Image (cartoon, rainbow over all chains, first blue to last red; front, side):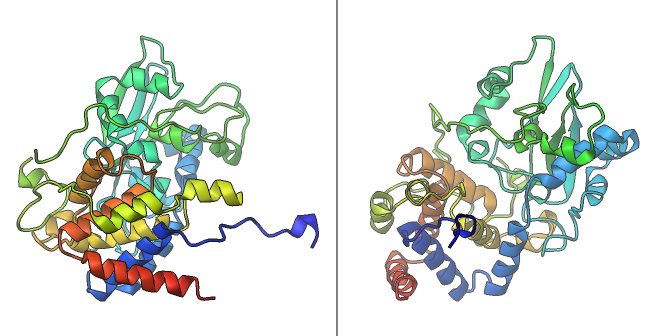
Length: 233
Length: 141
């Protein structure tokens, strides 16, 4: 076998966690908590999701002022042009469970920066942005961002000038958000595809800004909450 | 939080907080199980998430019951097996305590199993039996 045709490496052992996931799922199906068919359809749908449609929405808005107007006034309608139908695409036919159908696109300006959080749990615009990163789910990020947004953004490497206002958008069951960042200098004449490459997931959440040459999210350390809140106590 | 502020229509009894007492079966998995980041490093796999992460998320979504198939304001109280908001709050509690040293998404999986067992939706012993069967199946080739 030539070097070019070597199979991709794979994990060649069965972990307890893999077994646990399967056992929980099988028991839930046997007990009628949900059907195998619904689970399969949902899994296929979730597999199809990722951040590319949201990146394309931003790139398109940068290039087309009319589309930008549509994006900031009707995010769901604008999503259709990047292949995301919030209402009809998911197997449910009305949006994803608890994600629902309302997307708001928050437009940054040189003096206004938006950043998205879900203070209560981990609501995320999955139909257009895929699965949320681990740090987004943590109480540490969720609690501290609303209290000290400037400092938290600085921890992500995003230093904002004191005269830049920061607005934190708190996701909820009916409204999900993505950020439309300012188009960076040095991208003049770029195509939509090339622009979309620099609109990373972190840019769309608002903890980073697009930069020519940066096409991947930085690895973030995850910290526990210093003062864990115990619900119901 | 008033009921109208809840994100999902939960169980009739309402959510009472999580019992974070360790469950022996899950403790064994926590202490013995090999997490994805270790397996991926050992085998040179670059995928940041284990293959089962998506099926786990789908299971969580499916357990949200009617909220998977109806808009929120049409979901009948008590119709969700495990409402999203309650599951995530329980996961937060467990992640801050007994599963604090477990990485994600293994932590999410342990928390889900913990919630299901504590709610009596699945039994610890039947889960142990099923895990044994699944393991035998997966390693029988």
